[in-house]
Figure 1 (tube, rainbow, N blue to C red):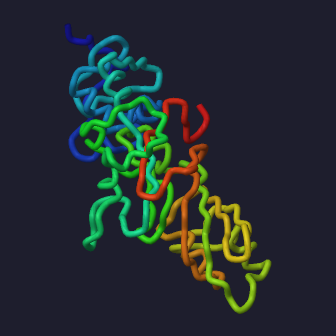
Figure 2 (tube, helix red, strand yellow):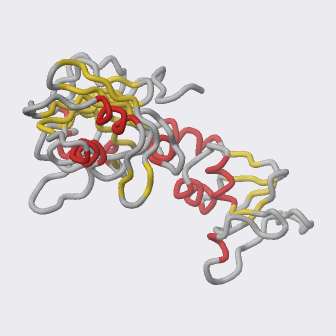
Figure 3 (cartoon, rainbow, N blue to C red):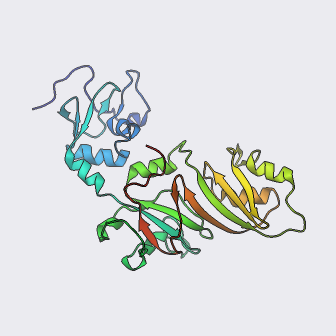
Length: 274
């Protein structure tokens, strides 16, 4: 039975780029965008579920991509979609030097090639059994430079990707940074600049937590992720970075995971509360 037409019923976006507009004058947004806002699914995932007829709005199946809703409408999800979502995996990898985070470039292989059965950490406590399906649509949620090491997240779950790299994410990322010993120690003013006061690409950086761990190593905690940010920050105050290792993303730690090995994110692990 076709859903009856009423003022708040979902309707198709007009031709052109209208569907990308944040909101119409009536307050409506694309159904997939609304689902993303509510944390129900990524937009790509939502579009797939809509096309499969797995989404209902106010009790009626909506299967047309570009359909729009208003905030007061009730969205329900077919159990099949929930099962598909529950089967998505997230992998934690200790990336070594020489691998790029995303697609292969300049002859360097992507870190994803390290996710193989023989490289799974022996102490991984996840009950999941590795299958080739876990590699499908497994993408990095954030990046590490080719010459940086440490915690890299690869996920099939668009909700996690949005949480870690979405606009205004604000999730803390912690790094240990080894610097070259200079002729003179970094002045207090330089340390203060690293904490707050630098700009990159014409934009001021958010405040960061920066402290000395020992004579040649700094600890950084950032809440944003510009390209080669830490290296460029250090260069701005006269420090040369020799090594950079990410050890934490939100509440998830690299821990004892060996270089070049990986494990599954456990069900009870969360990058942030909730």
